[in-house]
Length: 310
Image (cartoon, rainbow, N blue to C red; front, side, top):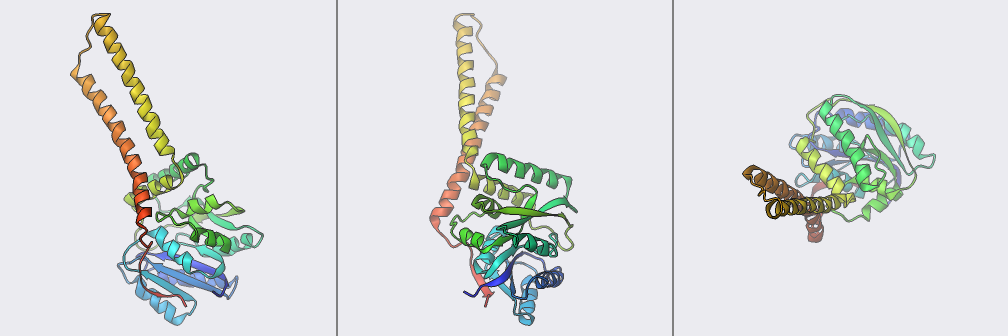
């Protein structure tokens, strides 16, 4: 496969209105670095005319390539599919919503040329996002670092520039549930960052509602940490120990102090508490079993309905 200087991977889901501006800004940014590049758009089964716009761009510019999925497989899978088609020595991952400025690629590339294998974009501010989303994101990334022991960069997304060696290692990771920013951090190598202020979304609506954010958080934690399982085990021992103490107290009260403990309310509350702990533990175990089941099935990560990558 012929190598080139830079590849840019852009996952797309319902970004029809912003695609022309995104293309123009990407072309301007990347051409200021090299004329030997490619733009790989990955259409994650958009329901608008995103694919048609991408096709039109590819017809007028040979540097534009694309993959289009048969159904929606998700953002992380879309990025993975794009990475597998890249030919660049340096590869940029950037979302298609224009919240991450393509102009930052030049600064990222300058740092990359000084010897870094990964240059990620760190957000100073996040315009157009609710206080709740900012707070939960901050808590999530700091919790991830504590739980996993992997130095996952805080206040970052998938917007980054990575060396070809990183791409090659990512291809060797077979897990079907992807958490790319964690995988890249786990690989190690020399990494640095550039800072920027994230813009508000200009067109359309976010593809990451609360439901998907929760699912993404669960995938990230279960992919890199077994701490939830240890917490479930510890909680089981704590509740069992507490229950044992209550039983001993009840026996002493009945046989020695002649004070039989009564109370329907306390009985129900303790039963519900223990039942809640059990359900949480079962749910945690189920998440890990689900990951194992998904891996064992060995289904393809994605299905490409049509593509142009030559």
